[in-house]
Length: 442
Ligand SMILES: Cc1cc2nc3c(=O)[nH]c(=O)nc-3n(C[C@H](O)[C@H](O)[C@H](O)COP(=O)(O)OP(=O)(O)OC[C@H]3O[C@@H](n4cnc5c(N)ncnc54)[C@H](O)[C@@H]3O)c2cc1C
Image (cartoon, rainbow, N blue to C red; front, side, top):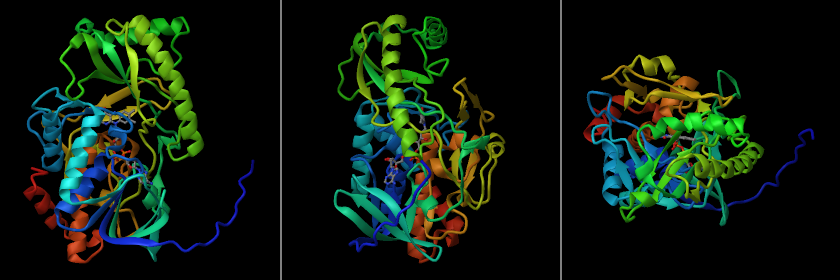
């Protein structure tokens, strides 16, 4: 049907409150941004559409943090470092390596620890609330309109942070963006994560980790595997908090479903992705039980509450971080976030995925300009939707990069409030010193 339009009736809505900083979206980047901003002593509100924080890490059950070690030193401190250690101490997280800090965690533990840190920071929270429209005057974002069970409400903020993953607020404020992989709108596939129970971990050897490719090929020949991937993307043991130590009865997460041609900013595509990935989950469970040693008697314990989206909008900022910047470990005068994650880009046709690594002992920096949408004031973007090309996104989308980005933009927003200026005008040296004092960067 050709698109038809109608006008929505103009309506009066209540102004709920006024804040210094409003953070839209409480995923890895947004939760840290809200904590950082509140810890700087400015009145901060976090708006999150679900009833808990963590975003793709918890709702999407992407339960694996990568390395913050560049091969010679740990490069990220601050709230990210504090959070990883608090998570391990809380229980429900396996620190795989003390040096790299890489970790597999139970999403419930992540929710508990991030919520504890949010509440402790004094940040206010609105769960079950969608930030749907920015309030824009001239080209300055002044707040957001929300939609929830309480209806539509307006909330004003001196600075608005967009950590929705998709850059919803910045895009609706008129920010330009890019979306796509090599060609416009060719996006990386989406995957629905699962956790299975009753796995006999004693039967799983280091070799098992490489066998799934051969087993998938065998199942494919028999028509028992139609998922468009040649191997599991990632999988591993999850230790839930307080779970008795019985390796014969373990939980494992699996990142092994794959739906192609999905635009995570299109509701019809998202619906199709949920239906198709659930079908794949059923096939995956049958595969595990029939082919995988240790998984013979496994059962489906939990499915993520939404498909995981690898890429959508990349908001065009004052600087576009490139794959070349990442791999050449480029540093910038306004570099505020250190990162060393490899570039991980999944093939849009589902063939495979590959990593491009930085040289050992090196890291790159993300300039502050990547968080400033071009030609729009009063707003910062963080996490997956920052200004980066599709290759750089392969590194910046990783959670241990999204979290320090959150700390940088939360701190920057607080500085803007205190200096009574828009984020674009803050003294970046002050931000760098403040992040260094907070132990975030070296
Ligand atoms: C299949 C898959 C596997 C991955 N594996 C790993 C991995 O192993 N390790 C790793 O580090 N990273 C991994 N990632 C990447 C990583 O999980 C995400 O890129 C990262 O979580 C992005 O963080 P974010 O805070 O920018 O956004 P998100 O995690 O997407 O958080 C955005 C938050 O905003 C909320 N939100 C969205 N829109 C609105 C709105 N309009 N109003 C209010 N709230 C809103 C969402 O509910 C969510 O809580 C994976 C991603 C996928 C999809």
